[in-house]
Amino acid sequence: MGTVKLKSSDEVFQLKISLLGSDPEIWRTIQISSAATLSRLHKAIQSAFDWEDSHLHEFTTIKHEKINKRQKLKEVLRVGKKIIYTYDFGDCWEHLITVESRQSPDLNKK
Image (cartoon, rainbow, N blue to C red; front, side, top):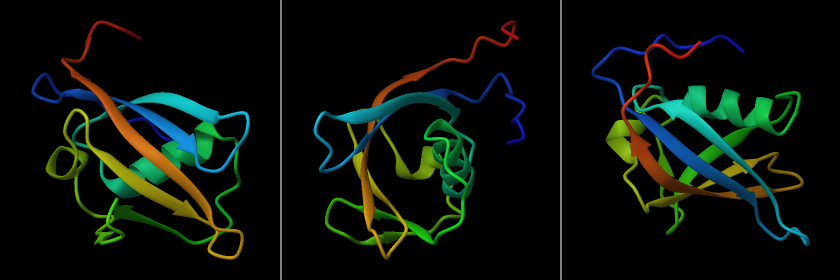
């Protein structure tokens, strides 16, 4: 997966992504630019869970309203907000995405 260059004006979201219905809980924490699109977030989730991106997916609100994958994260998310990521409509892997924090980027970090 390619990287997104951060600008000094871009903030970074820290997201907790939990696979719903798993016991014990299966989750990942990632950081991603607020300027990234939901499409880019999909790729980051695929990488974090070591999946092969071979199924359809969608993002929805908690009320199951679809969210356009071309929207930027900063247009959709805020600290404390939760959205749903569904991957593979046959097996219906649902994930709860929780915005844990929004931070200024460390542009000196490599």
